[in-house]
Amino acid sequence: MREFLAATVDTAQDLVLEDDGRPVLNVYRLRVPGAVGACTLPDDNIFGVPFDAVPHECVADGYWAQVPPLSAGDHTIRFAGGSASSGFSLDVTYEIVVRGR
Image (cartoon, rainbow, N blue to C red):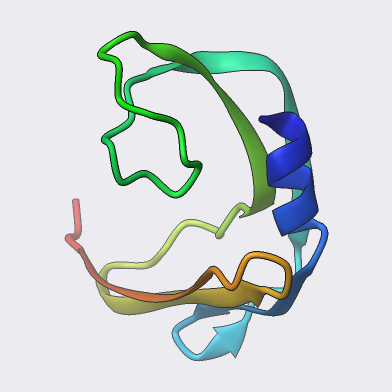
């Protein structure tokens, strides 16, 4: 699984992380050592693992960032990117409302 993920993450391109339209520059590649949990995958999962109702060890490899605390009000967080090797791509936008204390 680690080799499969690394092959996909290694070819990541056009990575975007924006906080209210401003680029976030402190994005880091992180390969979490060891298993990070257990998961059961559906038949049509992207890894091609057949469903057998038996939990498999899950691993993590990807790009991560810590966004500074957001002030009260409306915010938009967007992240996007793709992988040349797998054809996987995403473009996700979160509309977040932070309420004052």
